[in-house]
Image (cartoon, rainbow, N blue to C red; front, side):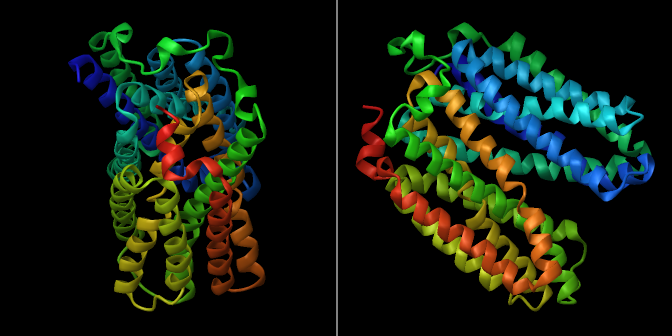
Length: 401
């Protein structure tokens, strides 16, 4: 691999970690924002919802632009957008300004993912995309931990606005990308045979019955993926620790062990999908996700809470890295960025409501019902996945031949 390609690959992987740092800032500052801006629960909840809408909008727009124009240029633009919008929150003095800036930041984050995956897919061989996508996902988890560390070090002294000011930092990385990497020399597998008239066409996602079935099926799977992630990270700690009266030494310990489990799961799944194909890999992980989520409701000691969190994270979020590899292989070059962005961001927009559903279940039922709800989602995803015809190993590999 040429040095320029290695740099471009490195830049694409790191970009995902940078957007996770910026997105997670909201989680660590929300309490301070509510107090400082005198927000009610609905106003505060709308911040995350508006961010998700921005991600969906950015995914669609920049997915098409990434396919139509130079992918690496669009990647730099998306990183710059979420960096500038995040940094400008430092100057926010009312909720409307915050909504606008979070929407803009969401546009950058939502646009970045699919373009980064498309850049990677243009450089590496198809049979290596699972492993490369796993690195992309792992860096995202590193970004989450980095965000927690930065918040722990500076939130108390800089305040919530000062923390967002750090969001300008990725602009330095954009500058490095611009001056260190020759965008015109980056390999882009498939570009030579692309149909220029179809590039960036949303219609290609639903061009025939098979593609329509495939696209909707993958949207259902990513919706479950995001729903499970939000349910796990937003609700499981409080459900297990508070309602079962278990004392764990700080939520940070739980989060770190869970993220470690997620990262290992991504590494394993990425290698597994390259070796045995997506259908068998997803079958194993979806079944184990359903089982492990339900069994986690029986955790009764601090140690089982921590170990169980790592195991659940291993299966539940380990699958995330597979979507970039699968979508890249199942859709033509002409919509490589658009397909990744559309499928994931629809999942983000719909799956994000799982926190609301889980909260409702807790108000009217029990932890066991929540776990059964989450487990049932993975069964639905499994059934959906088994109906997608092109996920068998032979067809999956043959698509790029």
